[in-house]
Amino acid sequence: MVEASRIMPNIYYLGFKSGQAFQYLSNVLLSGDKQDGYPHHLGDDTANHTTNMDSSDSNTLFQDVLQQIYHFPALYSHWWWNLVKNDPIHVLVETTLILSILYILIARSKDWRETEEFLSPQEEEELLREWKLRGRAPLTPQQQQQSSNTSNSIKKKQRRVVVHKVHGPWMDVSVGDSATTTKTSSKANNNKTSTTATAGALTRSKKKQLQQAQTTTTTDTNVRTILNFATYDYLGMCSNQPTVRKAADQALNTYGCGSCGPRGFYGTIDAHLQLEQAYAEFLKVDGAILYSDGASTCASTIAAFAKRGDLIVADEGIYEPLRTGVSLSRAHVKWFKHNDMQDLRRLLTQIQAHDQKVKRPLNAQRRFLVVEGLYKQTGTIVPLKELVQLKHEFSYRLILDESNSFGCLGKTGRGVHELYDCPLMHDVEITTIALENGMGAIGGITVGSDEVVEHQRLSGSGYCFSASSPPFTATAAIQSLELLQTNKETTLQPLQDNVAYLHHKLTQLCHVTLEDVLLVTSAPESPILFLQVADIPETRDLDELLFLEEVVQECLMHGVTTSNNKKSTTSIPNEFSSMACVVESSPPGIRITVTASHTHEHLDHCLRIFSESVEVVLNRSQ
Image 1 (cartoon, rainbow, N blue to C red):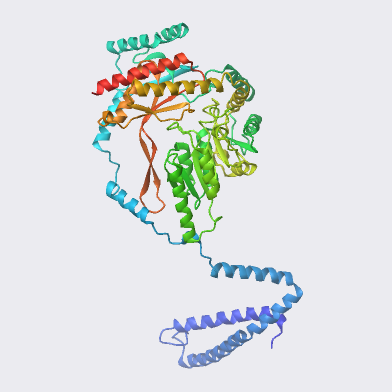
Image 2 (cartoon, one colour):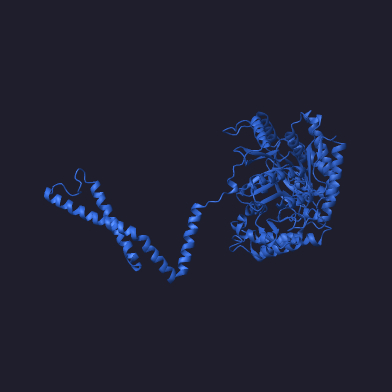
């Protein structure tokens, strides 16, 4: 028996002998008809003598190899026990690593995500119905002839509008005809007529301002001053508050224009930190994080928390930035009907039943509800009380976008969560706010607990990889917040009064004068008033999109600017099949936005022009 201290030299000797044996076998196999592996020109005697020598050497070699293999377990056992006595910690660490590697390679656990999921009967029926209605997807996009004709007609009706200046509820614009750029006498007469109609219901100072603005002309457009009912500057912070502009000018002189880098590197300035602290204190949360623009706030926040394998349940009516965030997250997505809590409960119940079927643990998947507080596309308000009850019942986290409700809803303008008395961080875990609407600035913030905020400083793509917002825009947002807190009589109160006034008058107008051809479908508290074509016999043969576009253009030519929704759908990847799930993102309609800068005289003028425009277009279409 060889001593244990000679284990390593014997292992080297075993390897050496194995190499010699392998070389000998290779020579024998490659020697052709001679089995000795030596050159053929040698004599037979020499060859025979060499063969005998090689034969004896090979026997001794194989015996040595077999002997080393036979004694190797005993040698290794002695070496291992000696190592245990001399260095037990080394043996423990090495043994743990070896066992871990063997466990990873052999014992593979079964993941619930790999469980074969079968379609429910309802899902099968839905896919079959979609296949029958739509058929196979075309290789190239194809449009129906009717929609193509409608689109061409809308393009002919649209006019090129260039905004030169916004001041209070007014804005100076250049309106040109997209179909013809040649200035004709009939166009000048129409402009003169619309000028007279516009000036009839305005104050003397505004009449004079309008007349002066209309004297400036170009080769193919006229510069005009019109009432602005298409802005989202609800509180007039950007267009009607000189203190905000003064604060921005001072910051521009102090800091310069840009911030020269992302927040995580060298783009953080004290104005950014002051903004985050001010908004966190106003909303009574642990902290806030500032993004450089409102759209990236929504998209980056959702993608920072929801990842591949997670579940997002979203409202069909959310607007584009939220849809972008949902798409970037790569999570499983399910949609419920807009503001339909019964449909949401049905969907959450189905998901819960499926979890029980596949034995999915409760904490195996992160799940989020994604909604808007005030929906930009429809002007409706989320029923937050019922939504929070479902959230707690089914254990979901809530992502609430307050971009259009912040500064407009609630007693102090904190948003829809204040309107429904649902505290942040308890009922709403993650809240996103765009500062480009109510605050009249640029950028966006996400507020919540310290965990929510600090997680985004390394995981929010818009925070890590985009240049931070200019300091003067952050200063403007801080000044706007101070005005909201201290001067409610010039900001929040006039806005809410105007919203209530116009909603009542417009509803009455649609019911009495317009004979319910158009219906106000937005919420009574919403500064976004949304009108849709009613489903009545008088409108069955009406080209809805073309009708709405003509009404908007007719209002524009008479000095009132509004905006319209074109019906659009969004294709979302379907979790259960290769076909995309088509979701209606915005219904067709007309949007009229109210601001604190408007007076009741402006609102009455808007109602009159709108009523006349609808009647003109209806008579034209008959």
